[in-house]
Amino acid sequence: MKFGVIVFPGSNCDADCHHAIHTVTGQEVRYVWHEETDIDDLDCVVLPGGFSYGDYLRCGAVARFSPVMGEIVRHAAKGKFAIGICNGFQVLTESGLLPGALYRNDHLKFVCKPQHLRVERTGIPFTHFYSRGQVVEFPIAHGEGRFYADPDTVAQLEDNGQVVFRYCAPDGQVTPEANPNGSLNNIAGICNEEGNVLGLMPHPERRCERLLGGTDGKKLFKGLVESMLVHAISLGRR
Amino acid sequence: MLYHVKIEITLKPTVMDAQGTTMEKALHKMGHADVQNVRIGKFVTMEVEAKCTSCARSAAEAMCKELLANPIIEQFEVHVVEAETECVA
Image (cartoon, rainbow over all chains, first blue to last red; front, side, top):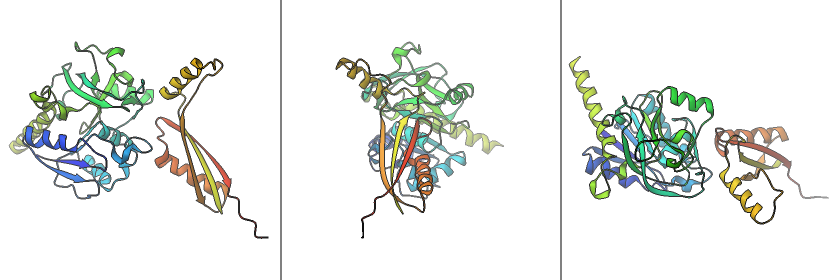
């Protein structure tokens, strides 16, 4: 399986993602400069965290117009995978690949800390190695991560099972106190209806090694690779 | 014709404005007890070459819908003023 880490001017978690995918997970990966328009060789693109285009106007608003974004829309339409982490999630919502918007945290502070999350959705490749209701810990680091969508869209996300991760307490309880930014329904990560595009504010790539506090995030990348392998084997048997 | 275009972008009334709420509390602490419903937004100015006022307005509105505002959380208001030209008399 081949990954591509998109690099926008101002991305700063690109090397972390590359390390998590290549060194930790053992997968082939290359950097993709935002001006590239040929990503046919990739099975999964990762839009990393950072401050693309200095977060000018709104987070992710300008990155949406990068030449590579048109290719990412086509890549996703083919059923290939895309993961947007933190600023990458903001770029995915701005580009319309995921619904909703992310804006200023309710307390106005940049929040940087380990955060417990409850896995809400299984049955998609991203959560292959997690179980429903499992509590994991990924770091969060953002000032504008408050998820918002209109009531109909939120109801649709909930009904379709598109909420993948929810901010929670260490025991898995979803409470207002466990919500670090005021996101509606404690939403930390969502996927599209097809389940091949994932966006989340927390950073799984920063929880891939014991030395860095745990390996909960590694399961996300490993699970994606494993489920693709299973899928390929099952296709081969037909 | 050159038009001055001013655009106000604010969060929709249904979207909680944390900056506005915080500034409102600060103003109350300063003694401005009669202040309420403080909202903070963005202000964009530009000059647009267009055939008429409504053409300039349409162009600015298209820019808002495509880039300057996020319709999920924001609303915008466009003000168009004809640019003053230098007197050649």
